[in-house]
Image (cartoon, rainbow, N blue to C red; front, side):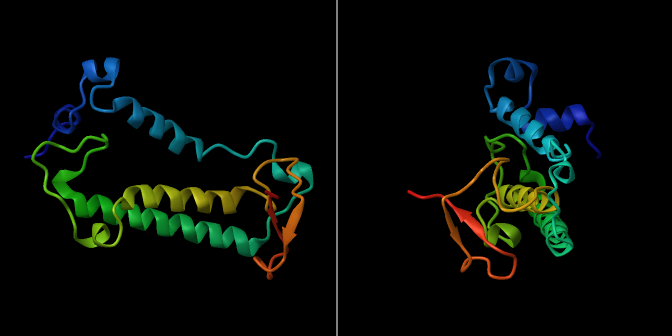
Length: 155
């Protein structure tokens, strides 16, 4: 029998009361959804307007990392089956999954998000600076010999 969206949300533990008082971690789910949606935003200002150009090889690498992240996430969802819940609190009586993606990683869905975020950074961000105007005091060519230097902050 196919469940409606409302039935699925109730099965996961969502409720209007929970959205009001965060009883099952509903606010965390909404915050995560906003952060995931932010990946679709273009970089501001556009890197090209700053005279920055990201090498094609790194953009391709970024795209590959995004695809790997999506595959890891899909495997995690498939492995969870009926135990899947977007809420931080597990479904009461749900089976503990230790096979497949969960056999090698405790949280493959979060691993997927991290991989996709890293890949998006390679696709969109230019140079090796975490934010515009970042000028490090120490540089190390040994860490990244093929593509120039990576900044390291002095402690």
